[in-house]
Image (cartoon, rainbow, N blue to C red):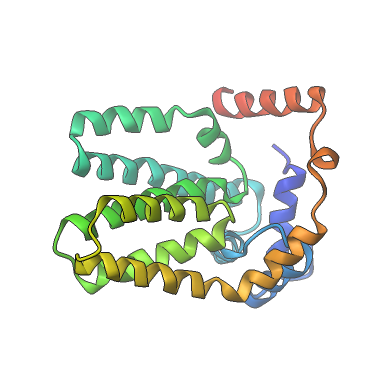
Length: 231
């Protein structure tokens, strides 16, 4: 089906509709200059994806489908390691039947990438705190944490959740405790270049009342979600 207005915004950030595809730097510049309410990582990854697959709606949506499928797979693995295979199976069934996940697996937006990174973050954090780890685990923790921040501003809530659990669950005498704290400080520092864009987005965004949907628009949106998910 045709691309929605929100999907067209994603297409615009990668140069779709123009004479040629944007470079990665041009994509970042497009997001920072015209869409301050967003962060650039998803659009950068989408740019790389379309360089391999093209800009047709179906192939662009395949990226969200791939990430959503990986979300279910990684969620199963994490839950299996943490609890049991039986619990992991039920978790995978719950995720794969989630209406909203299914919907965003079929939309050219960042909302399937966000839960994927959240699950990977929790999994790698758990492994670091409960197993002997290598530098690859710490690098993954850093990259995923920064990736969350640059995927959507709401990613900070996943990091705050980790921080609250970390402070209350583990003793500060533990050397790993300090390593994780230092890593989170490094993650925060890595987001500093985007802070001016974030502040600009707050200053220019519409009020909730202006941007809210009417009842009929909300019903239409919900119908589209169920139509995509079960149609």
